[in-house]
Amino acid sequence: MSEAERPSAEEIVLYEKDPATKVATITFNRPEYLNAPTSAARLRYADLLRGATVDDDVKVVVIRGVGEDLGSGADLPDFMEGDDDARLVELRVADDSVRYPPEGSYRHGATMGAWYANVAAGNRALQELKKISIVEAKGYCYGWHFYQAGDADLVISSDDALFGHPAFRYVGWGPRLWWWAETMGLRKFSEMLFTGRPFSAKEMYDCGFVNSVVPRDQLEAETQKYALACSKSRPTDTVAVQKTFLELYKQHKGEYFGSLLTGMVEGMLPLIQNDQANEVDLTEVTFGKGLNNVVKDNDLNFPPEWRLSRSGRAKP
Image (cartoon, rainbow, N blue to C red):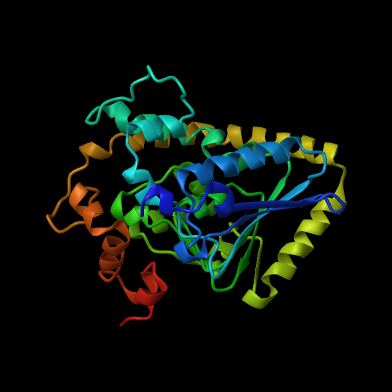
């Protein structure tokens, strides 16, 4: 898919607010592509959250998706098709004299890994939001969308939701490793990381990651109940103080430290070697076949209940 064929950032990430209730809503609107954000959409998401932090009309931000899923992660083909100039655009470097680090260098990958630790990149933008954030999870909550669930203040989920990151099976890590370990608990997150299997909404509730699990047809009402309760509880100034306290607590727990560490780890990907020739890797051949197809093929190597895709889970 070419850049011209992709929807704009404004089409992918919708925003509305209700000054009467002080509830704003960010909606991922790309259901035909499992709500995958492009790089530009991620930047818009970060900008919207920065605006919501300042906006006196907003006390609560609800994050949801159109269609069956919250989302299955970022638009990786959009990222992989980008050249060094596209990287500089994402980094918001407008100086034509700046050269991106060359391919093969540690900095070629680590530069973007470090950028992803910056809230302006749109991966961990919820961490510095001084308003209450609520993620409404349903269907797939994978990859980048799993980042948002991990960073949100509250997560309300449908009972059919699946949580995880396909990258655990084709790379081995993701930008929010440290914080997932904190929010899920080390033992359960280790299981997700090493097996690559997705966890059900009930499992995520049991480990304390999810606040409420309801049938799909009750999800929006449940989210609305939480959003309105949060908006009516205390003044916006109080919320800002509460969020600052929680942000300091998270930094005491190493949230940003872990983000920087994962950025360094991601820069080491070119050094990783497969044990066997048939293992999934991130070579050009892999991406030539299409990452989605490779992940689906690899999915069949696991028990049905440990597969990532709904279609794969339905096969014997």
